[in-house]
Length: 142
Image (cartoon, rainbow, N blue to C red):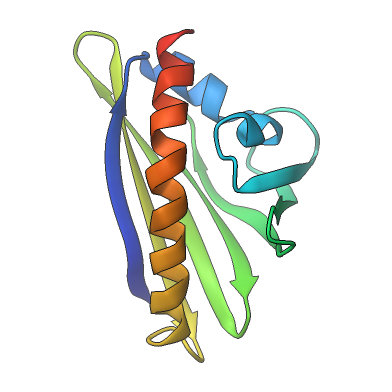
């Protein structure tokens, strides 16, 4: 697997609040404007058996299944993109003064990971550039 994205940022919320808010995947379109709709099974908060799909505003639909789940530490899900397998790791780290550091690591493997994967990563970073400030603002009001 090659690392396509490795992004850190801090939110003004305790790890418990950050985990609870971010774990409501179906509400992500409120801050991730590139996501049109989210389906999660079972519905509700993310859990070790979660699977679902994200429909993007450009019409692309991305399916995922949780492959790793450690409460208040991280969850990882896996999904396909064209001929690649993509792992999305969402990590949480408690900081002092009721802040939480998020680290998002996206890794890819398969045909096109070194070429198409770079284009995927570029677009994903652009989406994060817009989404992260909105998520930070949303979490600071909790």
